[in-house]
Amino acid sequence: MTAPLVGRFAPSPTGRMHAGNIFAALLAWLIVRASGGEMVLRIEDLDPERSKPHFADAVQRDLEALGLTWDRGPFWQHDRTEAYEAAFETIVDACGAYPCFCTRADLAVASAPHLGDKHVYRGTCRSLSAEEVRERRGAGEVPAIRLRVPHERIAFDDIICGSYGQMLDEECGDFIVRRKDGAFAYQLAVVVDDAAQGVTSVTRGVDLLSSTPQQVFLQRALGLPEPVYAHLPLLVSEGGRRLSKRDGDASLDGMLARFGHPAGIIGHIAWIAGLQGEDAPATPEQLLEGFDISALPTLYAGRISIPWR
Image 1 (cartoon, helix red, strand yellow):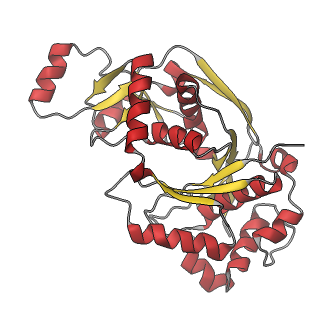
Image 2 (cartoon, one colour; image 1 turned 90 degrees about the horizontal axis):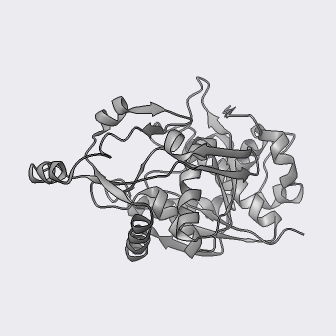
């Protein structure tokens, strides 16, 4: 029998929920509850400019209304600076790091596109001399800190996508562990938080699949446990664009107006995602009765997207 899993909801408080992140939250909940496990709620508010307290409150109310319950939390990333600092120092000592002065425009030119939205950094600042770094700092340029990665293949088994791996230096590239504004990078924060909060199951969109080898690398270098990953197809608009908070796609309020109540939303998402055979209201508890995690590879493997309708 599979050991009970610990999963997590990890919303960023930058807007209201939409169909895409409700789908990911629903699958995370089903996978964990089917194992008899528990859910953690973590508010990922690393970005102070975009994170808003009223959205953090709203997402908790939204999850509760949808029947997506959690057992521990909420935990807040803004409370975790000391833990990130300790991990940062450890990983920099272990792997080496360097200041990177590249702008977004520089990165667009000096990077190669890869799966999802990620670009592979080509090491523009990797060979800067100590004198060049001093000069640029003296001129007022503020660098990010980028981790040196080895020529090593990092692979893992995904519940849905199967075996997946990347050669770190060629397909990931040196990556940022501390941003120019001093905030710790998402990649570092999430592996530290998952370990501290006992998370053993991570379910999210396939757009983050290409970032996972970086996180696995950090977990192994820091001596942290590796969760089981499941990367889902993305819900997309009719034109193939993934749904987003920024564009107001399939917003929770809009879906409530369309379907009338939370069970209508959950049931419709479950229907288009192949979790039930009809477009009928359903609660997460009702979907759990017929849920089979072993069916997910057949249902979703090889699929990048699911059209919203």
